Length: 195
Image (cartoon, rainbow, N blue to C red; front, side):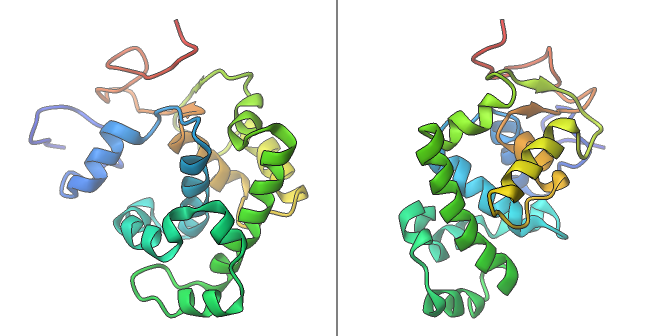
């Protein structure tokens, strides 16, 4: 594949989509500890189910507008009127089950925050705050365990594959492919625990 800037990237990065390239280069795999960002990414990953991440990413700004900037308390308070409004919003993915799941998952997210002090504490405790380096996988024993726990707590659209993708996106799992300029051991890995 030919890249305009001469850098080799993961095979999934579309060279014709500048927003997708920025996401690959600057966000994907960078450890996230901020609950607001973790919440946004969790909701967006749930909307990805059965679709491509590129499709969701292209609608990210529309999702932010539709979901009140992913303000947790606002999303937790959504009632039927707001759900109907979202179902009629042509700028986002209008899947009623996923929209209702987003509201449900927001409430579970808030409960986890109360229990652990933050969702970040919950998520990173699974790896003792270490980044896991692996690629060419779509799920793992780790994502199986996190998925099972989130389902037990009542979350929806959080199967092992979605959770694996989520953990890759927020840097718990670092999966840049062999040959990518951000492959582990090259470039800036952004890992606060790796020396």
